[in-house]
Length: 171
Picture (tube, rainbow, N blue to C red):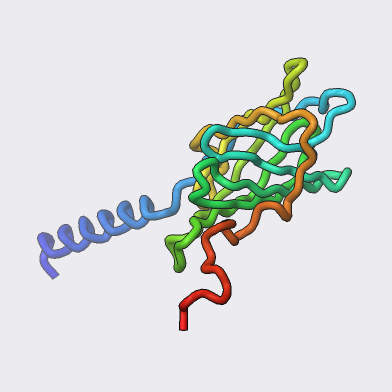
């Protein structure tokens, strides 16, 4: 093998190694948040409002597990989350499904984080969510609606008023 061929082979090998080293997946985005004590007398359970995501119903099991559901304000999609809390911080996984869609494009999934913040007389969830393995990337802040009990069963994959009336002329 000539010197020129050896040099060319070495360059190709180095280029391939550098290229493959850069093919790894990037590290997931995480929220830089520090947990502090939950305000006295407060809990995750409640109904929270966001202008786009609508009402988020959260229920805590009294320990560290929290689950929730929401329906977008424009009724285009519904979602659910499940996570664990550490004092005033909750990390969760979520999924959101568009009404009337089927297949892989119908559902998005990701991770997120909320911090429970009390600014009397209001309680807030200050949060972020990401797509896929990212837990950060987009803002998701909510205000708690006082005197509202959460009802996870009130939000489902069935959009009220969209199914055909039984007994119609579908035959």
